[in-house]
Image (cartoon, rainbow over all chains, first blue to last red):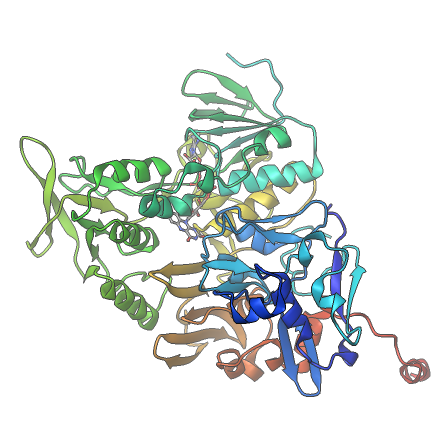
Length: 165
Length: 442
Ligand SMILES: Cc1cc2nc3c(=O)[nH]c(=O)nc-3n(C[C@H](O)[C@H](O)[C@H](O)COP(=O)(O)OP(=O)(O)OC[C@H]3O[C@@H](n4cnc5c(N)ncnc54)[C@H](O)[C@@H]3O)c2cc1C
């Protein structure tokens, strides 16, 4: 039913855990989008919308999967979470988010983060329709790719996908 | 008079459940008429936000659950400020208080709950309120002044929400809770104590193991000045909020002969005992996957999800409700607590693992190696991963301690587990020639 969404996929064997995706994600979502200002002057500093999972020698960055059946949207108490019908991305309207953290419990990927200083939930927004999200663009090793995955659904969200097969 | 318009879908109740259903219907059926009837006079708003409204007087636009053009864009007729008083199953009509009659092919009852008001003397006096609607919040807002003293009867979710709002408005609040601790339906002793301590640090007085037996008011003005407890103790106050719970608004269903137990009984498609009539949200007893039976679980996410399943089925897309369970995220005075399922084992086969370090407290309840509940206090960021494992009933017996460790993240799980659960995030790797050969030889 939903617009098939392009997703950021991890080419895990070639990820070295350099954290550049994290840095550029933070920069992209900063107010100044200036590297020095974003990291040295802005307060509160924006959180990265992804997390690095690391257990040497395995590394990968994990972010919102923009699930077809998005439990975060269904659970959101205020209507701050919705799906952008153009990009298919699940996005948070910060004006409406009150930081109740209900969405955080419902994300099986642990990919919504509580920004406790700003009282907002934050998550990957696929850089708001950018041709290539910042994390992918700045990955030095092509360990991140941006691909049309159709309606490919994570195993995790399967159980509550309500459609009877 | 039955109106001429043919109404394919009729939804009574314009909140989480009703909107969840309407949105699901519109995913499958773009054109058939939908009417939503609501006795509240506004578009759908976020009910949990009424405490934010009371605390900060945020404008109504900020409380709207959907954008202002939602109804128009979705082709939904909203009849707001109108109460449905009766449904006629044979004629497939609903009668409104003003006499209008609306026909339907498919009906959804998403009528929610209404506050329980015990027969305490003085409950009708000036200064006594309940707290479940925006109208309640507005009435309290108009009445209160900084420095007033308030007694909140009931230390559950709604009681604590209104307490925080009143404190933020500069009132002095005392909670009177009948049981031995606040938030006793969703938290265990330890987490309740953490919550109670946070409230007390912020100036709230908590009295447990007592009830209010009388609300006392001035004879001439009817304004309240105190409450009396069951041990005859008096507490002076100008405001009383009754927040002992909500009960499902089942009247129109039971009067029509629809099966009602504690809530309206629905099957796994959210259909009531009458074909074509569905129900969801706070008014129902729907499947709880932890208890393995129908239960009333009055929370917003379950209302929306139940509504979504109902909507799909009403629109002809067969869908099963996987079930919901108690699920809460609370944050009072900045203290975050998440919990789901049961907070203690229900029988002797249950198992508990915990860790506590100051205000950071984590607890898992397991049964046969599978999660049946958890509580996370203080550090809640990873509780979604835990809830995912619980929802999918993954056997976590081999790594339960890992789940409550400080540094827990996805990669702390055994590799086959995270690889399976995160399959959608990895770029599929070409199968190596060697593997193919080995497979072929088998
Ligand atoms: C103060 C407060 C805080 C809360 N905080 C949380 C929270 O943090 N997290 C959480 O998950 N949940 C919370 N809840 C619970 C949550 O609001 C409910 O679970 C949710 O609103 C249920 O949605 P619903 O659609 O089933 O019913 P409701 O929201 O109760 O809506 C039902 C609607 O139907 C209308 N109606 C009923 N009968 C008729 C009729 N005969 N004719 C016309 N209209 C009718 C009612 O007036 C109402 O507008 C909170 C509730 C309150 C009051």
